[in-house]
Image (tube, rainbow, N blue to C red; front, side):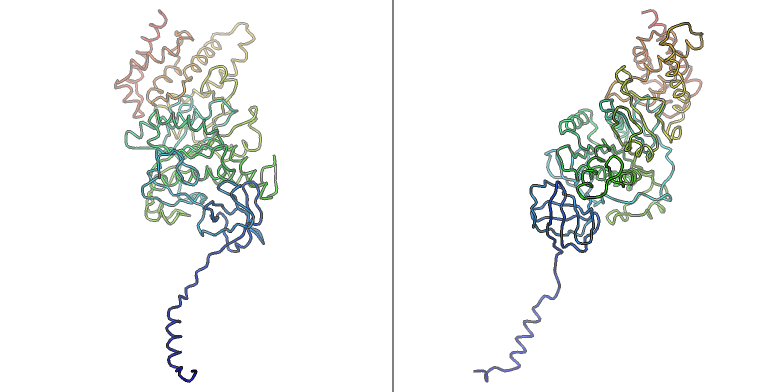
Length: 526
């Protein structure tokens, strides 16, 4: 039998079989779960895993690499812990944790991974992959902040102006109206959107009740602000990792608009809850704890997040060279865009000198401090003029506002000092009496109801009356009526149109003084 087998036939068969072999090596790096803690897994066998890399379990749950140790990898889970068991297999995706951003996200509520939460179906449109963590633009690619971002709040736009590309901290105890300032600012961008020069808004809700987020989304929808807004939500019931990544997702969406030459505003509500989530994850990962049990790099966490807010240089050839550009944005970069950040921090009993508040104060370009006592007195927004500041200041105001509101902040601070003395009673000299009267009326003028932002030209007209003492004959309890009547008389007039352009001249001021005098005398008689 063996004599009938020809060597040539064997070699032909072998050759045919060898030619059919697929020599391309296909292997996936697979690890095994060693240990599962609350929201954190330790994995053995992923020798080449990278920091911030996305990993995937067999059941579709994902995790992000945080710790790279000699014999294992520590990763935070982006899903429920109870669905992961010891011994489960984990695959590398070879992708850094990122979010797919598209224009279709506007008007939607999403989680930090870009999945819709509003039950309105999948998010379509062309998507661009933006990394959650990214280096901030270098000094060469930025330019000074000089364009105003109008909040629609008289107290903020006059005394603590915010510019496009700035980072302004909103800080105060719970229930002092911090979120209200941010939401009013978002609502005030509607006129820009309708005029075709939108400021896209991203509201990031971290560790809040689901019902609170739903109420905010409802308000934005009713007021027509969802057309230019994305809501990123990681509620209190979500894993700590999701709360930790939520602000980075918001920054990544904002950077997409910023780097394509448009303007964006991102609100982080609030970073104290993100710090707590990061502390939880870090302690489970056995990272050593520092002050107040927060990990040592908590300052770096917030600084690398907030540093991403910037005004990008308006020179196309320079902007295109921007550092750390994601591959998906290559060729799509346009100069002149901006990302403004409004981080929110909650203090305990007004303690601004606690660890997280001082950290964030030192990273931002100013802070709006909200005071519980002022809030309870009915001065809303409850801004404490004494320690609130904008380090960009007048550069972020239109000329007319700068001229009118120049002395308002210092006047209000002086009035607050004098107000303490009036409580003792006694006689006052006429100058002090006048300062106090003006201060009281200006304080009333700066009170503004929630969800009713005011166009900047109307603010200037009202503040002109306040700073120039045109309300001295108006009774204190009729200040709000004076404001309403003044605006109604000026609506649709050439005066407001001129102020809107940032121009204030003798003709404009004469008209405001004439209307103010008529309104004041009418109120005095009634």
